[in-house]
Length: 114
Image (cartoon, rainbow, N blue to C red; front, side, top):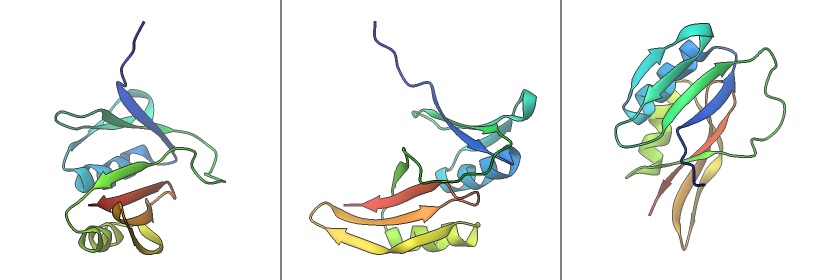
């Protein structure tokens, strides 16, 4: 049996708020669902869903998204304007450049470019 990834689920306190951050960042439409869930449907990509949980994020994520962008610095500035925070500085190596970020609820993600 082979499965496929239908959606990636993020635990958070305020799904309706966080989904709008990610919808703006990724260019999708925010959709609110029953039981407090929300998601972003992305054309040609896996859906990103947000599930309400009572506990606060306490430790580093074991999984994070790498978001491909043309300009890491421009993307980071725009995300900060939407409520994200930077983790350190832009790093450049033989694979390209990346900027580690935190979304408004503290979930890690990176902007990457070749």
